[in-house]
Amino acid sequence: MTATVSGTPKVSNQSGNNELPPHLNENLLSPRFYTTEFEKAAKTDLDIAREDFEAMFKEMEADYNLKHFDRKASLDRLQELSPSDKAIYESYLVRSVVSEFSGFLLFKEISNRFKKAGRKELGQFFQFLARDEARHAGFLGRALKSEGINVDLPNLGNKRAAQFFPLSWVLYSLYLSEKIGYWRYILINRHLKDNPDKACAPLFDFFEPWCQDENRHGDCINMMMRCWPGMTKGIRGKLLSRFFLWSVFLTHTLTVCERGDFYQLLGIDPVLFDEEVIIQTNNTTRNAFPWVYKFEDGKFLEMRIQIVDSFRKWRKSSGLAKPLALTKFVSLILRQLALPMEQTNAVRY
Image (spheres, rainbow, N blue to C red):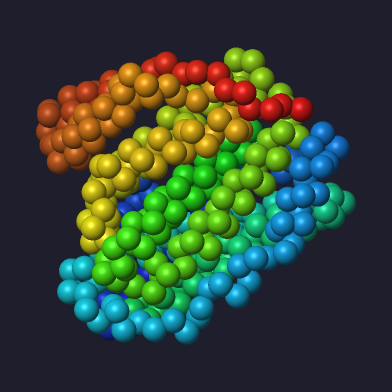
């Protein structure tokens, strides 16, 4: 689960250092919390996609990854990391645990609201989703504790008020968050299987079952979208597809390239990795969104390099140069937003 948290968690080091690990500053790349139209969500018409819902319910109920996350995995490999590499790894853990726990909070709240509204089966369905996110967060939390870092997860949701998004926005962004997470994890997993010497931590031994959770969650959200066919029809569907594909891809590009030290630690080129994740996610999204970006001419992917360079110059600039750099950055991302899209054959009920 990614890009769903706001606020900075309370992080402490057992050595007494209260500074946050790197890359967890509050800026436009920080994950965020959000809330939605719970009463509207409770009116979801499952009969529109009853067969799909029952199939997904059974799959989630089976809990295939119940025993896949070993809590006692050996940490010996971490001793081979230099202090700087350990800091990079710890930073990744902190960002990841924040995102996973935020997913748990959102899915748990949706589950509770469904149950209060008398939608028992939907409530149980989202409880399965919350279960998976809590398991991921717990596994990451234990990995952090082994590094002497404690993240105050129980109070994480109290750090800042959640941002309100309409239900359609939440479903579009959740689908993309889960599917882009799947491709990010599966590509890392494939790379590390081919380069086992780069698997510097036991965390990476569990990326395959982890990414399957992400994939299933995306399919669950797709099923929910099918229960609201108006969200994907006409100009509304095209605008929502464009905005959320662009915003999620943009955030991914900036995050991966700005925090490329983690991927380099694994022997992965962050620019090429970002490109492959975006291509695969865009292709997968054809099964859910009515429109996706056209990548044939290469313009969308080529503009990423210009955008990252412009973003870095804006972050580093000062004085009169800063608004000029920001203007160039905004101009580039808006040009990318407007690039051509193509209609898909996604089935709508």
